[in-house]
Image (cartoon, rainbow, N blue to C red):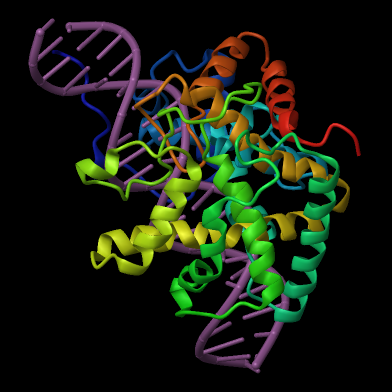
Length: 350
DNA sequence: AAACCCTACAACCGCCACCAC
DNA sequence: TGTGGTGGCGGTTGTAGGGTT
């Protein structure tokens, strides 16, 4: 094959970059560019660094017009909204924030935003209950004036499996052992699970037909037996089956995965609470992110994509379509389009 | 003042897709 | 067409610095 081997790892320096190394790398790239070969670059300029390390150093720290720290409220909201809609696609999210690197955003998310959005749900029980009530009121208000996220066939009635949720709620707190939730919390959780359950639905947003199709994509990979692959008539059936399995399954892998799913479901109302409280003016914005999952799932479910998927929904086609199309145009459209999609199920009038 | 803990961030690691050979 | 190098990406780790006990 005749290609030069990658860097000699035994003879490569690791760890923090010195100012001299930074200066060498920056000066060379500003004068000559990368030459299209990062692996060969450190040898050219006498750096005992791996080419990948040089690339990272340049992209994340040395290249011009980079911003470090000091994320604005607007940037916070963009990151949160995009994360909730496309997941940890940091490079795509970074593409929406000029001057920010994927590494920066990833670190910022992991150290601050994630805690802001997801964490602290187990702090003060009193605060939690208060916030839960507040959220419930917000949701009840939405439900009373907006029907757009109700699913055909389920409209104006509670899915039958919702009655099982109080029992499931006890199972959910798997990492702390069974925990009893008060009635308000159960009620709040039930409302949110109903919403979340419908987010896994394959229903078409504009369809008037009752959903009985077979394109539903299981949000988690716990169902492995052939008979379990029989399509569920709807999300309600799937969740009812899952909750039932949670109490009966003896396989540790299965229960672990169920626990993960339930943990995620448990986090769901808290995510909304935390995000809403931390960003009062952007509450709608955050909720749109969640409601948007349904739209995203719906947009991809009919294609029965078998590749990359996650419980956040398979959005790879949405992302890649927008991303590829926008790469040549400075990515101005992804943000608008994504937010437009996220708004799909948000109340039209507020 | 020392030990410990927490946070933020730079850097590394491993995987994957693409492409040259 | 298969193999291996390279770039790109996301996840994870290491560590410095500040805060707390």
